[in-house]
Image (cartoon, rainbow, N blue to C red):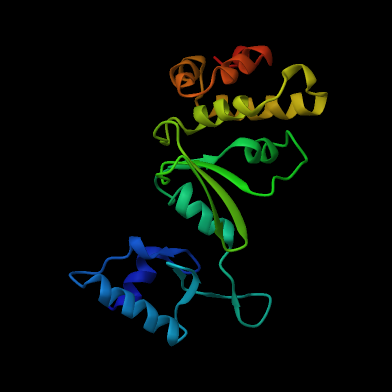
Length: 211
């Protein structure tokens, strides 16, 4: 199998290719770096950012090729590869994406297993990301519980929430409950969060909505 065919089969078209994820038989890293550079030079492969490549997809609505979406690159690095889950949108970004605030943060906060430092700000394409090392290992089984606790941790005051915010919070909790979040799972993982998280969960009544 040719190197470019291997890349397409493993990563797909218009999907981020992180250089650290690339291996090919017994070929050295130097050979791989050289081949990636060659594929870029001949126009078959595009360089999104340092260490990130992709095979461009022809645009259906204009001449040329569609650019790789920054959100997709962020998701692949910090949240999921499509099989495993190793991160989630967190903090004020989670508050906004849940419809609990109309204020858009100037960066995207993410809690992830794929960050060795406590917190780090990075630029990925046109997206500013604040990546935080996860409080505990994130998995498919616990991600919804951790996300709910994260949401409770950034809540300022349950008493100050208006009707719309309470409605959106109830929707978020219902989705979490449908995904398997229970009082027991919240209790199990609450030890990894500040006391404010569980305090807000009781004061907002969220804990009573869980089975």
